[in-house]
Length: 519
Image (cartoon, rainbow, N blue to C red; front, top):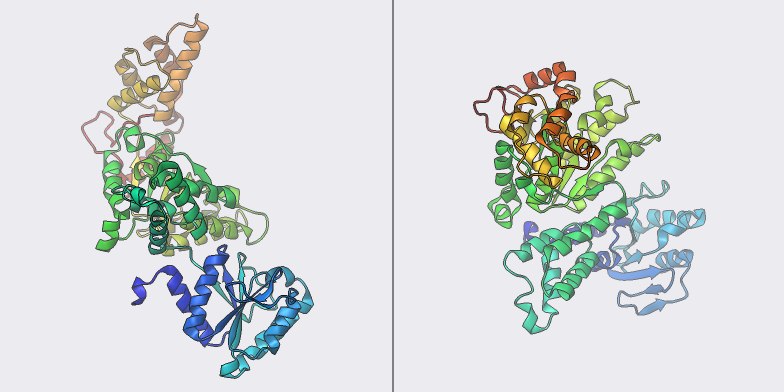
């Protein structure tokens, strides 16, 4: 079998087999999947010609099937002594060892073994493999240990798990267990879960729904995000892109890229898109668009708050960011939302204003965006492009940069009608006159006029709000476009030739590319 057709688990087994044949004395396998990791180790041992032996603090030394070899060797010192004194060509898998490495005598015994094992004769070759969820290695052993990150199941392995779950059903239920299109969607939904988690959620979906439900399967990822506590899970906009008016250029671009996540695109050799940067006037729907993309593409929406991950301890901020990005890769395909990214990275463009934390964070993010694995689509939003580091804007970080401007008259009327519908008040109010007098209003400011008008109407005998109430609310509102006119003008000047307009330009009095927003 060629390397490119191997599953992630088979490739990992091949890597470990090579390490064993190279006589590495200590291999540190990092994984939360003990059972799956041990199956991978069995394959590696067989390929390298080693007999596998297992130790844990409850059962002592045994074979993989549980047959006891030395039930009395439950102490780690006794286990290490058995490794030292045994002359069998074997790999010793130590399941619970890290907890005892705080004891200097155990650490010393393991370190001495690491020095002596590579010199043993070939027929007495031995190696130690530690299986643990933590990649933290005592400094005394760091020079001896080879760290192997055991990958989560890939598409091929998840497909095998799904097929096994369906095969376990009664024969009369198997045919309808994976309707057309549902199988691939369920596999995508389970990517990022451990083998045990995938098996569990497949089984639950089949029991409850009598079929594989991709929504049920992908819902398991919310628990993964909650457990790690470095990302926020957001519910997407239910209506998807249809819930956002206008933005025709952005919508067309997103619709085209959505197909790149399909199995046909993978077979074609098309890579998944990296992401998009939305730059524009505050309150004009950039964040709303991120929620709409997640719904339209039927992917989890994860928000990365860079400010919340900062720490007062040196190196902790970058470690937190790396962990968050690793979690995002784990649950991919997904949408990773970086809201108002210029604020989180402001220190990177202002010297050492924050002790270099933002600069380090920027370096971590840029490196990940360039080299990341998995199908993580980044949606970043920014209000002040002048504060964005130039490195972030170069081609290759994002697939496209879009500029979102103020809405036009037609779009403003649509926004007002949408806001009235949200409050159950869209009963024939003519919004056209109000749209004409709110030329400088953002979508958020227009939507806010409706509750203001309702407060006034409620105070006046709880009557229905009228167009006059909306006009009165607009007259006392000072829009952002007036208070920050210079800033918006500079933003529009920057966008000329540097960013793609989010909407199709047409003949408008405002003379800019605009769009409507359905809030």
